Image (cartoon, rainbow, N blue to C red):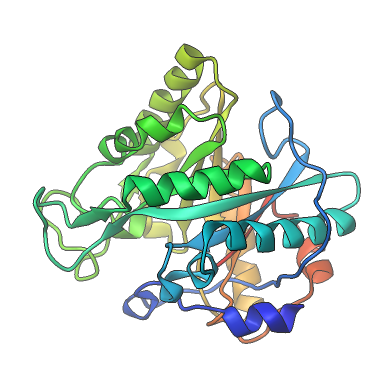
Length: 297
């Protein structure tokens, strides 16, 4: 089954523009439905999340975009989630789709922030497919010249759905005068706090299950003053370690970032195209510390 996913493996969007990356590796397959989260306990408390990352209809941006329909992606994810669930002992396994919703562009666009957005119909089609299979949805935001909080607010109509969460990609957050790809991006611990406070208030006001805020990182410089990040009620802050490299380098990077005190939960990304040595699920689950989230890109 790993060979099947390997055949689908896509490149990460514009990864070649960013040097100095390193991380580790995993896999994919198919089985029966896994045991899934049923709340209100925060996700990842007793669950490992299995995530397909990408942009719909864009095979070059991740595994999610290699499928011809939301249903096909959700069905494949269901199988991989079941496999992990059969191997990870007492922890449950939960599937999720990480959809690139706000993507940086080469031109500033109408708003001048160098970001374009996935259309509403496609976004809701993936949310519907995930809902039918009891999966979560993560809307991924690349920020551009905007701010973290402003971009999170733009997905507010979707966040009222109990299954929808948020991810942010600091490497593309270039401030009010930067240009994505040309200029390195970064956010601050206070940016994380403002986003978490917004999500926490939303959960309380709408009586929703807890939300996840996933932060992609593979370089220390992409988050300034991360120690300023605080804990907020009803929000789980997840550090997803991004990067491409040899298994030993990837593991060292994962362990470096996983030890960050501000990271409540940790996630590890498998680059199905760039990572040349793809370990088995068993090897992935044996990593120390154990990843709370496994992201396939």
